[in-house]
Image (cartoon, rainbow over all chains, first blue to last red; front, side, top):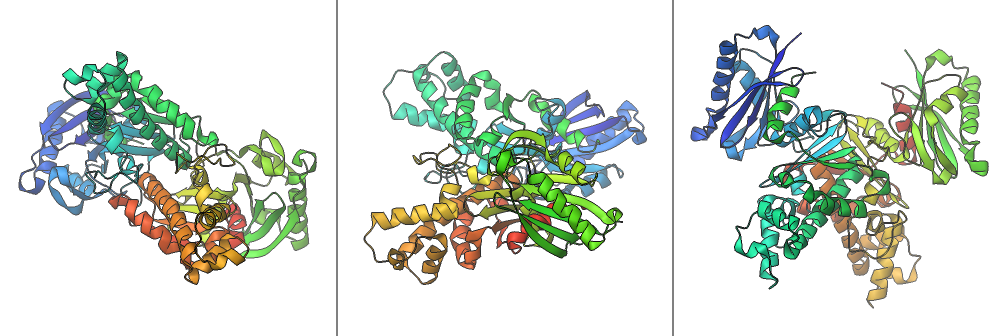
Length: 313
Length: 313
């Protein structure tokens, strides 16, 4: 029986790596820079070198390693095939799992989308622990998502399952999202979206607000809400309306036990929850209303923990 | 190895039963009335008697029967527990699968929600054949739904997976849906919803329409669309907007290979598809846009075929 697994979480700037026990404890974690030069051709070799070096450094028997899981910023299908990753400068479709496995001397490798993999981490060791049907929503610069059904990721037919940030939630929106559509959930529920809503609110009213003299960030917006700033609370209401309503639709489709909210916005604390819950309860179908809404607990480690889980039964 | 399975589709007026081969061919199908007197206490005994009689009549060896699957008009969890069924006058929570199994001399019984079970039928033998990830949407008096992932029903944590008819798609609607909320998809995409949209359109314009002299039904509305009736086409556009947009949201969550549309409205023919597809393409996230939209092919047999499939591996 294997004792260890590697978890790898690839971002556009750095790659987070972890050596974990198969019970889910992090033995060691470290980072390497992401080299996106030359179409990102060094990304996988750099990762493989780092993993192979760690195996040597720790004197680990390769037979004790279950494998390596890797989370990537792009759509990855159930076989480990990625179809482009803009942030890594990858502009082709290829099997990441197969390629990395070869570089790791035949070690079992599984690949997944980074948001899906983070969801798997949270359901294994984080806020979703003990649940089987969970939807994770990552509220960062954008909004990502991952759907866990019966303990496993729903990858989707073309690797785009859980693309919750790009649900069009306001079809009459005229401002474009990065994806090309208008009215995507991430235009209202991401950190960027919150700042946009805040600017609109500041521009359309003359009301006093402590935010008029501070840097406009989602973090400061929630701090102002904690201090009872009326203008900030109006922004929080809008955020909560779109996200709570959006979650109610997801609940009607999947009827999950729990939603787990991650990403930078979630770290502003429990202050965000009532605004979401109020609207969720208002719009959700009664048969799906028992779903809990929790904040993620693994922070930046969710990705590498979930990646490792992919190769652990 | 078993040769046969029973499929049972329970409605508020009649119960459809089928004896199927385990390859999915219907050997015989028949109906019995649904006796909802006395809190519907006779529903399961009547079904059991009909199945037991059929086994005797056909001289089938019980060892050749894989089991009996039953679809029910209410939320059924993964263990076969139903939590009330208004149309059957069942007002309590109990394990239908266990109770029916006892009445059938210990035969394996599995129970599911009727819309979910119909989806399983279509993915096994109907329009979804060959696909693993499918969402079925039943456009009847109401709108039902069933989500198939990796060939299996997503029941949901509380038996309410696939409650697509009650996704709130127009949060500013003031007219109530039967479920108590306002703005549910079924208020615009069901046969009833189409008639409502049609009445609104007739009332708010003086335009000529062949529908002014005909019975107001979804069927007649689509016939008028086929004849190029401008007012009917406006109603079709509204129907297509809500349903196409709604499907785009479901696609973003699940990334299915195919949507299968069933129920009475789907039987008006391919005329309904362009109105839905146009809006689906407009609002769907590009990574999820390859999902096909097809019409169901099994008609009223989907339920009993899918019910039988529940007990066949």
